[in-house]
Amino acid sequence: MLKRIDIVGNPNIGVFIQVTDDFVIVPYNLIDEKVKLVEEILEVPAVKSSISGSSLIGSLSVANSNGIVVSPHVLDREVKQFEELGLNVAAIPGNYTAVGNIVAANDNGAIVSPFLSEEAINTIETTLDVNVEATSMVGSDIIGSLICVTNKGFLISSTAVESEVDFSRKVFGVEGDVGTVGRGISLVGACSIANSNGAIVAKDSTGPEMARVEEALGFLDDL
Image 1: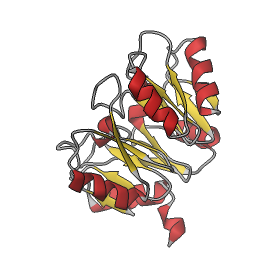
Image 2: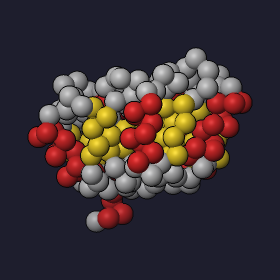
Image 3: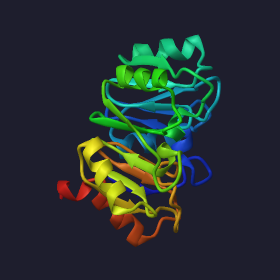
Image 4: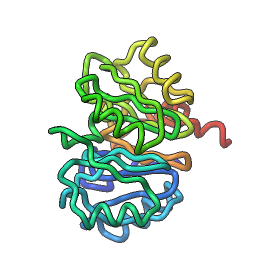
């Protein structure tokens, strides 16, 4: 299911929510009506939480079916909660807190910003159990903000060139395409959330943008 709705009061839904094929992690302050809507669209149960005491869950983490890598300032109670979900949990080493902005991952692979240390890359590889490739995309290091990826497909910033799209296909092991959401927003990772069951994009997304998202994330295969 693909929907364009206002969940968090602004287009940056990916900044506040983390999604996998098994669950969706939402902020404590998200009202129950919106939580239920997210669960229905993504077809997974929701877990209310925080990371480092913050509601910016999407920015402060990256997750797949195997694990979750979080800000180095994560709280002990948050680690325990994620472990109880059956996940490997690790804090990214170093000074970078917004791991969700600089890493994009599914169950097949991850693309990370090139400024991450070898120790940080090893942590991501081990925790998410994927191969990791470090590179800039579209002249930027905010990989996680530029890509929305699932185990069925990916949407990447409309400014990506074909070689970057091909590279992403190889790393993630799925097909994908370029696009925008929210009437021309190219930071598709920050302004959408998705798993293999569904996706939610910025409320102002146009019909053509929705069609591109649907195709890129592999939902047309379900028809």
